[in-house]
Amino acid sequence: MRRRVVILVAASAVFATTLLVATVGGAPRSARSSRPAYLLNDSHVHLTNYIQEGIDARQLLAVMDDKVGRAVLFGIPLQQTWSYRMSGENAPTYYLESDADLYYYSFTDANIALAYRSLPKELQARFDPMITGFNPADMYAADHVRRVLELFPDTFVGIGEFSLHKEFVTAKIAGEAPSIEDPALDRLLRFAGEVGLVALVHCDIDTPFPQAGADPAYLDPMHDLFLRHPDTTFIWAHIGLGRVVRPIASQTKYIEALLDNPKLRNVHFDISWSETAKYLVSSPAAVDIVANMIERHPDRFLFGTDEVAPRTQADYLRVYDQYKPLWDKLSPDVAAKVKQGNYARIFDEARRKVHAWQEQNRVRRQILGVRTK
Ligand SMILES: [Zn+2]
Image (tube, rainbow, N blue to C red):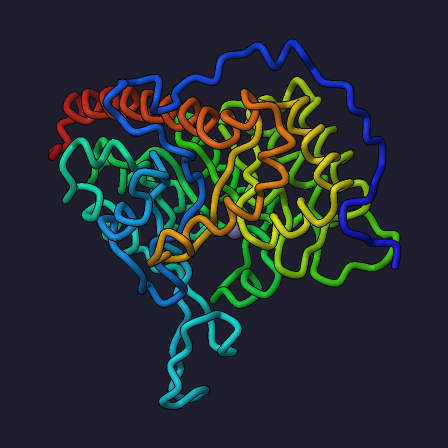
């Protein structure tokens, strides 16, 4: 097998020192001395699972406690159908437990908005809610997002995590599977760019069982997608890795080619998920390669847990702990950016832009005589 866990290619240790002098920015400890010095912000965590069950925002706050300053707020938009015909009284709770379809459960957006709005302002400030209940293969997806923004103003700052290609998940979606080339996706992402919404996208970089020697199936299409949407801020979840999608040969080389492209400054990567961490810290050599890549592009990576409805802080922080070899390897400034600073910069900017768009939209709707809330 030519595919191996992070192939040791071009492990240049030359640091981009000019990038290192950039400020961290947004770390909670710098804001007010009375606030706790949090360890991290979480750019990727799910409040609920594939049957819309999990914890509420206050339970998430309880496990964030004094360790996690801010976190995104979203569930999982895909709902596993409980088909009595297929599984009788055995209610599936995970997508691999049934052959029945997954479908987009749009009510999740109302759920998230109400959870956020039930909190006092100082607790809302710890969350960045995301819209997920749309079908990216539907030309009307952008209209759903607009409707959610109008119904719940000053709440959401992004869209996602939504999936384009994910091992066995996207093939199970009722109706058409998403496609990177779909004009519906372009319409959605154009709208996200216009509003200033962050787009957190899951797309495996390759198919689950690729042919040896073939190029990764989704790298070039994703590259082209990013190029088509220069005004949209992207976070590519898990650096394109997944449960059965292992790092492709020279993965860091491919990712660095994206990072080095001045036309793709809008693209960031999260290193969330225990599966991703498993590969990135699989050996001291792998840690070296990953740390060097991050040091050369310190503003482009975000930490996330990808936990689903964590109920204890130990569970919640297990991926953070898994990354200890990486935290130890990164210089303190760069580690602080990956853990907190990049999150604060990206989501604060999104909140500012979305707020400005909503103000403009409100005025536009008043002029048009549309009743506003
Ligand atoms: Zn994901």
